[in-house]
Image (cartoon, rainbow, N blue to C red; front, side, top):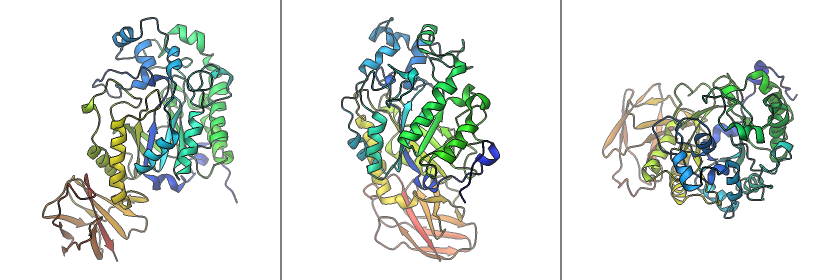
Length: 455
């Protein structure tokens, strides 16, 4: 009998998350929109303060680190934000190339910003309030979400959609000083009455996305700031999604739909830029972050603002060893290119995963062994017969791990290494002898994985 979900938390929270999500471990996030035209936010030490996709608020509004000087110099003081859409052409956008890059990076799913806080839509929405603020009216004149979805799925990856739960031109917030992120003249010209927003924009657009594009992931964002549970109609929507979505057995949704939801409800919990303490092992969760300090492409970033390939691989390992997923963001340019430095980082991650993917995909955290060494992590396959001991720093001679329970070791091997790995056991102490290799030329550079087979 097919389970029917009711619009209450007891029923909705009883849903088991589709298994593909926990197995996937690594996905690609894409922040792409009108903000990709100016592509600028001053780098600063404020947490979450270097996001270029917040240009509308940081330049035109009064929200925190204002970039007025840059804007006035480059575009002029009277240049209206919506005019940037005329330059969001995506003329070099090649969805097949993008999908190849993500596939070769080892990603199992992709999530695109269908609508960010600026309200601009990357699909030809039928919503009457989005006329002249969607891709088919101004900008690329193509269905960016649809074209990328087709290319991604052709390669066996899942496709998802990020959706901002609020529109800056309509919704009020406690976060800015005067209650709004953007100027009053823009709100009056382009926004609608806030009391109408949920019924006329939010819920209709979410259902439109689900029915027309069948996203495997719905990444909600911004609702957790000010949208209450009652006004958001979150429980009614989730009951509809779980019961009626055309891909109801596949779709997952996160926890940013409304106030009070983060860390309490949702198929998985969302963290951001290492805001991850306390989430491991209690509920499916996903850490998102950019390759640099911004989600949207930021021309203010330099080389030192980007994480190295090694740092990103190590972060993936850390997250997976705690039962999380990593959703790594790419910020395309307004003309539709993925910056080369970001491509290079993705390529390197993919090369590492080609060798060591068994220790990442379809694994869980493992408590069979411990090391007391911050450079050693453990995962295991679902059957618990293969334990993966992952070293983020090569040991030249030998290293020690400790059993937390009685186990019989069948063999130990180093992934992508053909020789035997010798070891000795003394009680709960396992001494593993490192092979004589040049780790910098070894196929698993950045981190090294020993598979411990148990009887």
